[in-house]
Amino acid sequence: MSKYLQKAIKAKRNYLIGKLIQVGIYKKGDQHLYELTLTELEQEFEAINESSVEV
Image (cartoon, rainbow, N blue to C red; front, side, top):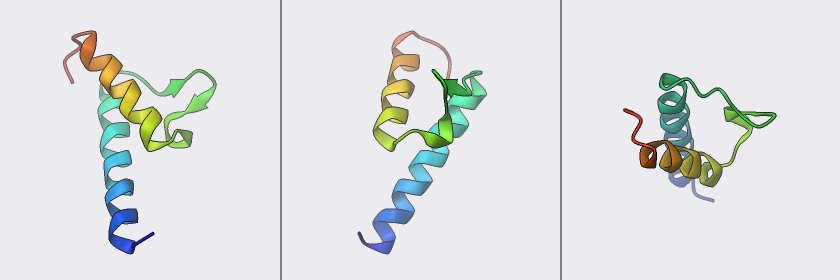
């Protein structure tokens, strides 16, 4: 995987983790946010947006 792609993925993960923490989400089940994949973080973020919580 290219260095730029890895950097972009890391940046997006950090962004999503920060937004989820802002709305009070620190874990999903028994996993901390930093343990989730990018896809899992995106799904959690979308679920929050769909429930109309201000992010």
